[in-house]
Image (cartoon, rainbow, N blue to C red; front, side, top):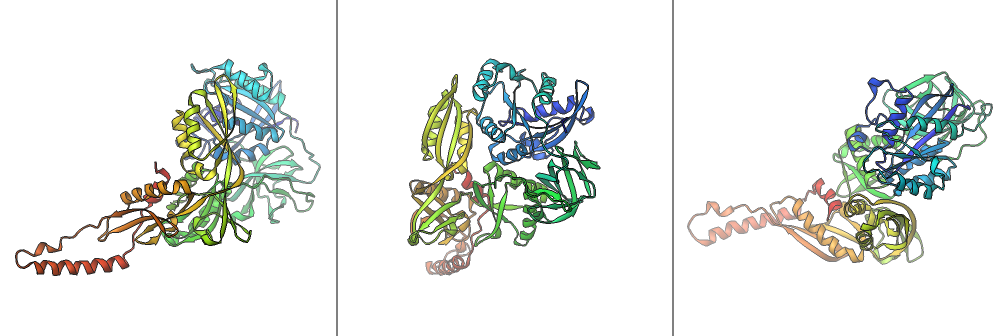
Length: 595
């Protein structure tokens, strides 16, 4: 056990974590040169296409230091704020962390947020300055920032380059020297913490765990504490590039277990595994329950695919525990699910994965956040969906969630960023100079305003330099109204939104204009209206496609033409009464990109 080191790599997005992990695997000869490719651990094609890490990946390496063999368990983590739950779970399975900072970009918002997460779990932090081979690198300035943030000595900061491999051996030596061996008692009853799981269509569900106390052997009878289910450990082993089976795993090891579990509800991330004969007295403290930030309806395009969508979401939830969902129905779209995501990128990735991994074509409604509605009797109702809002006469007030956001930027972009935050009803809490010309702005912002396009706008006005991180702060009373979209007087519930009273007018008008472009023309006029309650605030009309019925009338009395036109008018009136307007999928997505 003294020769095991469990560590993860944490950093802001695009600071070179995955490339550095590649070099570590190469230097420890974990991967044969023929298998070597860029971002070895990012095995999902989506990750490779976008160049981001979406899932944490665990892998075991062996390293010889001063003639002794050490086992290093590495977990590479995502850097984007939407996948921070992955990071928190990886940290729970480690005793140390490499904090990677890009030498050309310096410290950014997610660096600080991930660092605090690691410090709360009492991890040993090793600061690494990556990409020092770049011409634009500023090693001295970035070192100053790291010293200021961590309070460490200058000589403790390791300089490395994931691309050229410079400084990688020094990192491996430092991991062995500074990261403590796992604490635990191999004589005690078995306690394993599940930190991830995946679905395999041949083997059932595979759970990844870290052994805190005890020893597990192949064929042992085990029990999952949270669900109370009992299984046999058909296969256990460690995670190399592929899974490699072992006869036994001891305290401090990170490995996997296959026990033929078929239903996804039986495995919970954060659960404890123990022996049936000699169970542990208490479960390990798992992870805090994840709080979704953004809610959206996900509906199958064909109604009969509803059950397939359910099983696809359950399998996805195994692999991504931050996804939550519950069934709901909509007048316009039939049966579907209300899903909770950690952010807009998370929502986009889930949609892509449903399409690629499970072949599910889905319609996603306008994302929104959860509100607290206080009625006149003082009861609090949580509303995730505008259609679940009680009657307006019964509501005393509505409270909306506010986030505490941290934006780190250079001084050149302070003006435009402040304008953006004020436009989103933000309140400046404080402004701190970190070092040189870098500033941290702390804002309180309504989550509903941030959800749709805040991050994209922030990136474009700061030319990609500003970094953004947030956490839920509190709920505050707000003047919110429900904006309905009516097509020919019928409300389309999938397009209704809760919005602030000041934005309702312009938002309704823009929405109507956008829908006018997207809804195909019919044989009759279609009225598109935006309404608050019974008050119409905007209207556009999609003109009818006119069929020339008088073409066959040539010459003769005008009354013959009039007779044909009257006949057409009656037909159109009847058609308008029974005609349904189909809303194309593009219309739901267009609302996200209104500006």
